[in-house]
Length: 105
Image (tube, rainbow, N blue to C red; front, side, top):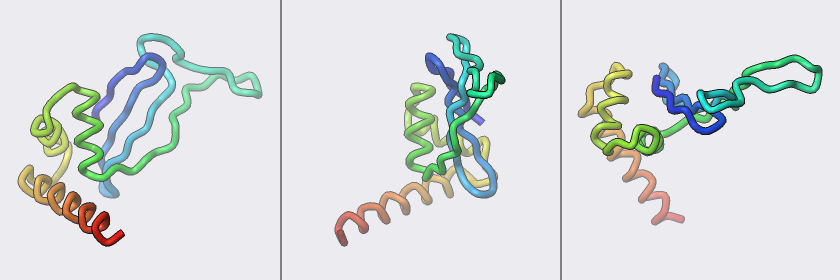
């Protein structure tokens, strides 16, 4: 799992058997650790999960860690059961699928 603290939230990118997901949790070192709900209770609330493609995950990790495309793939490979080369092939397939969709549209 990778986390990057933003001004008022923490970006969390996680991987499980279902895929790669991201969310932002209220909090972080710069403030807004919790917020008061309408019923008066305080909570740290995460936004809903958003499923990412491998391409989107590489982009998010690259931006969050300020690293290269290759370094972001390494981070995913370390967290995954997939081989780095398999991840690269999947990214290439995803990009080809997107290009095909754009041509067909």
